[in-house]
Image 1: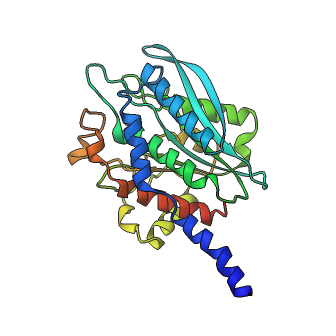
Image 2: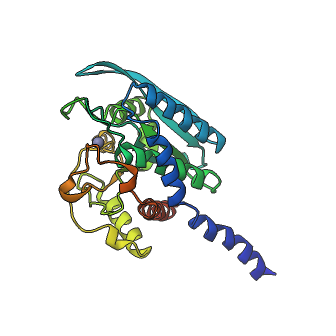
Image 3: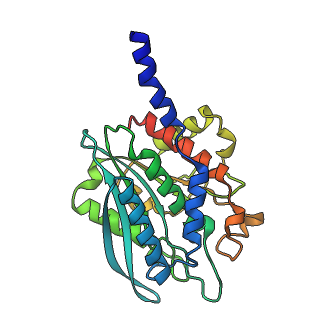
Length: 288
Ligand SMILES: [Zn+2]
């Protein structure tokens, strides 16, 4: 009898561990890309916002928005971070983040399948996979707007959404409750190589690489270390335990990045699955 009860308790946990679907993440990515170029403030990104909010609500998340107007080199842009939350009991919070905007590139039909599309699709699938799991900590999923610079990247042009939310969460005290923040970016490339991002928390980098090795996915996490300014940085600078999962080698000589070649045919469900499985394992090890 005792043994049977143990079985009943264990089986759902094992199923849950395999629940993230790379195929479903790719389907969401396709739907996002089908809206066309999605720069901050565009009509296309408004359609994607509606889709994201509807799906998160349907999955049972509390959805809120961090909206603001950013001053950019091409004038003011309305931006909206979309935040999905479910409460735990510990008072601490685990945050999964990624951007859903695409870079405005005048004269180019830049649809950002990997850069902006895959992160949005992956987060929507994470929302589905995590919605019904038991949790100790609060879990927040954040879809950042305005990651991309308008024109040349600088300290003040780019990562608008994450800079805004980090400041808001510093002011209202939320930052002090964050147990871990995991940002994902450009993780749909069929030739997946997640860099060992050097600005990230050393403890989370170790945890991530251990989880990857022990789930059999170590080869997708080569030891190549580079430092990248991404949406985790406003949080890192404010002392948050944060890590960035990014593949910054997209196509021969990185030639698909920010070009019309960043299309869905360059992506694979398997890559999204690898990142999904590894992040779910990291969440277990963080005792979500
Ligand atoms: Zn980009």
